[in-house]
Length: 131
Image (cartoon, rainbow, N blue to C red; front, side, top):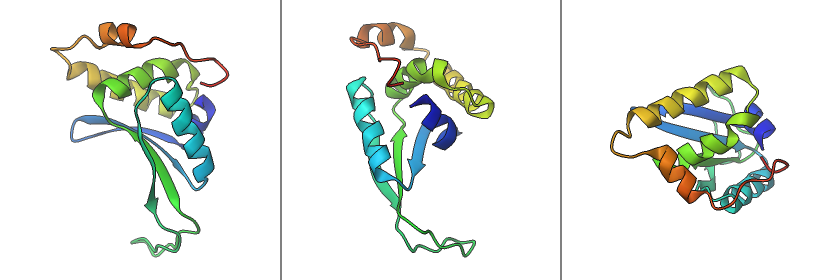
């Protein structure tokens, strides 16, 4: 999962809100990722089709297949996901963007101790071969 996220994932901040997206043309891979996330206790949105095959974008480029995405936007879910996946992200830009999102989450949670919540909510540890 870490390797796939390095290649196809995206961490970003929009309107001061952290976000994670992983997408691709192979919906079977994304449904498998969604199942893994569910198994390790991460509630994610999707996978859902975001672009249909044949769509022509504003640059005039036609999409050869359906684009599918999984998103994690909820603060607690995103923080939990980052805490679990962090050791497995090797791509420098992806890692730096992930840290920016993590810092954004922590800066917006002055009333909530995310680390304390995380330790309470993790009743299973992910297997290293999954992450």
